[in-house]
Amino acid sequence: MKKLLYIFVILFGISSCSDMNEGLNTDTKKPTDVPAETLFPTATKALFDEMVHPSVNRSAFRFFGQYWTATTYTDEPNYNLRTRGIPESHWLELYRDVLKDLKETSEIIANSEGSGEAPEVLANKSAMAEILTVYAYHVLVDSFGDVPYTEALQVLENTTPVYDDDAAVYEDLTVRLDNAISTLNPEYAGFTSADLIYGGDIESWIKLGNSLKLRMALRYADVDNAKAKSMAEEAVSGGVFTSNDDNATIQYDPGAPNTNPIWEVQVQSGRTDFVAANTIVDKMNELEDPRRPVYFKQNLGEGVYDGGSFAARGNSYDNSSQIGAIFDEPTLEGIIIEYSEVEFLLAEAIERGYAVGGTAEEHYNNAVTASVEYWTESSSEASAYLSNPDVAYSTAQGDWKEKIATQKWISLFNRPFEGWTTYRRLGYPEMQVTALSKLPTPRRYTYPVAEASRNTENYNAAVTAMGGDELSTKIFWDVE
Image 1 (cartoon, rainbow, N blue to C red):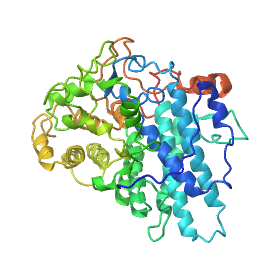
Image 2 (cartoon, rainbow, N blue to C red; image 1 turned 90 degrees about the vertical axis):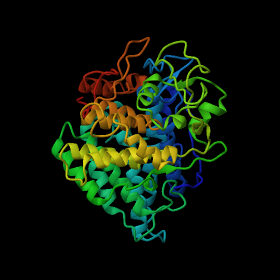
Image 3 (spheres, rainbow, N blue to C red; image 1 turned 120 degrees about the vertical axis):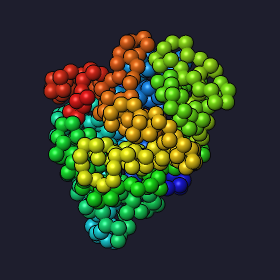
Image 4 (tube, rainbow, N blue to C red; image 1 turned 90 degrees about the horizontal axis):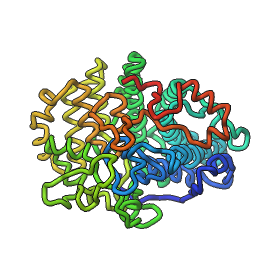
């Protein structure tokens, strides 16, 4: 959906890690004073910004997926999250700027009886907010493991919420997602101009809900295969994405403050801190991938791509492949789920024996084609790429996990959270140990430092339950 942002920006600056709990637990706005049509797009943009943002002050996912590396400051590529308080920022953005606004949106809708809006319209609005709420909470679980949930967002009542078991949170989220999907009624409107993603198209929201359900289903695959199978089959039966036109996107504006966050970091800042990592560049060179001139600039010469050594000192901005010109565009759309991801999930589901229709090869081909066409706008490039024996499903290297994960990881270059998660779930592609800290790819974010000092009892209980607060500690679905 190509449209300019309709946003009433209500943002709260992050002044320091020590302000985190104060900012989260201060009631800075009242539901009766701010309409749902303001809060919903604000929360939507905050969610997209958090998933897109490349700043080392708030995200390390482009390093965790080994898509980017640094030229100047190497702490973050070496998985040092403490120096800049990255976990604090991620935690705060999702709880305060996304979930809090969505909660207030839902409260306003619930108290809108007598407003003149049809109950079915209000129900659709509530379900739309609920789908984004489920998305944000599942990202929190996938990032940290056990997190505050049943006692979260009680702004004035409880400043020290307990942490809920990560598997229990997921279990409840699946119920909430099912309820939201079943509530959506395409015969009625919901949010319209305040819907930055689909402009009020309820059919598209049903597809989004089912596509998110399919993603979450495959998270369960190695810990509860029966549940994963049931969820996946239900999602497909309900209707998932079927083309790039279904992608869940927002279109950023050409001018501040609503530009794409990558532009803010790459262009507006005037800095040259990041280049493409050799992990992704080497793999794409090996496969002669047609997305290279889009993902990377040809600053080293036409057809020449050379990534910076991942997490090493001394990478040169001028002598390494730079991030592609398309990422210098302030209006580049943000994406949180896309059709190619759905097709890769379906290929995986087939390999696991789920009844979702088609063959693994068909879905794999659809996924690769969708990604290549999205980035290159060329169906012939996609066909030629799939004819490469190193790419073709029947002849590519490895078992089905390696084949699917490798191509899915490449396709997720601009969605690094899901690229990192693909590695955690399927074990591919092969990632490098960091050059300086000698650490393997993390399995999670560590908890915010402020939680240990301000919510000590509940933090300690969560650390015990998780088996540690380390980068190597695994969340419930991570058994790879």
